[in-house]
Image 1 (cartoon, helix red, strand yellow):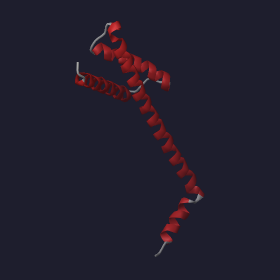
Image 2 (image 1 turned 90 degrees about the vertical axis):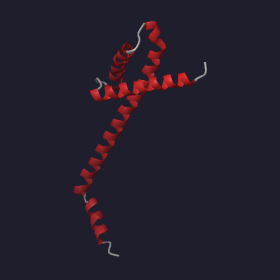
Image 3 (image 1 turned 45 degrees about the horizontal axis):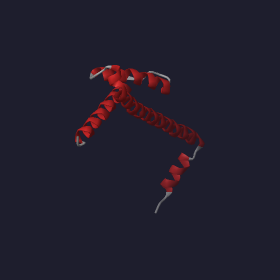
Image 4 (image 1 turned 180 degrees about the horizontal axis):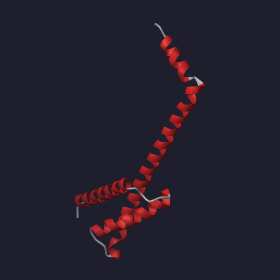
Length: 116
């Protein structure tokens, strides 16, 4: 077999002029992926905690329905800003809203399945 092409590719990749930008690109991709994963994890953790908090206290606050979602969004923005140092973007707010609705629906379904 002729492995000359493999030798050529290895020589090109190990060339200093190619290696430094290649390392920079790989590191940039890794940092970007880490930041995206961290942001997603923060959104999910905050959402679950805030939904639990609101479900425990909404009666004493005297709120129902969409007022609970408004309270959720207010608390979420405050807590997200504490964690990330900036206000959440619209996409992040929408993700949190959808996640909160899903958690509430899941809790309702599991409560309705329990015998009374």
